[in-house]
Length: 252
Image (cartoon, rainbow, N blue to C red; front, side, top):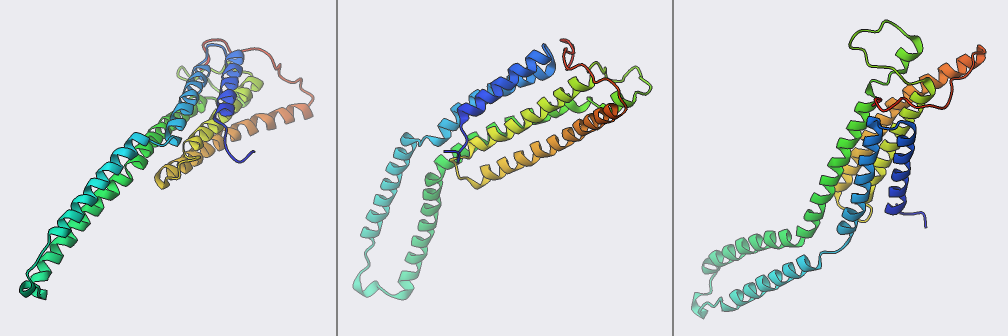
């Protein structure tokens, strides 16, 4: 029962995350990225169904071509005739060489036809995974300037310093939403190869998992800094930061 990913459940989870981000950070760039992830998740359901579905028309065409080729080979072999006195090893060598060359070429052609459906599906999967990879980097760009060190310790603000409008709690939620989106992007990538056992596509999904895990690890280091500062404040008797509010539509 729990041995395969459910595309519908993943899409519902992504949609819920989009609403959560939009409610806490309305009009923010992160909410727009979350909406984009939702759209990609809905598209992933269609692409996954196409990859899982056998292409009967393509298989029928390839089958007809293979039958035609096999018939042509059989007819050609049947017409090969040598007079009894001409059948010598010297006369047979050119014939065998020609037959072997033809068989090699025909074998390559047959392999191309047999693997055509798989290669088409692989192209669709790789294109979709590349789109997810781009989204993962966009999420990383949004959290790039969310530096808890500058917020917690202050420091001199320069004209080009990024605006720091978030409270520690809001920043923690912002970063946590980023990790959730990265995790869901990894799950969407896994959908494409759940029933498509292609080595190239599987390697691309493994690369996506490594990418999202690495990006999430960097974000969790920031979250750990915020939590450590909150524990220190509690030990020192400082009141906790308010857990309500929003950064406004200008926050990205």
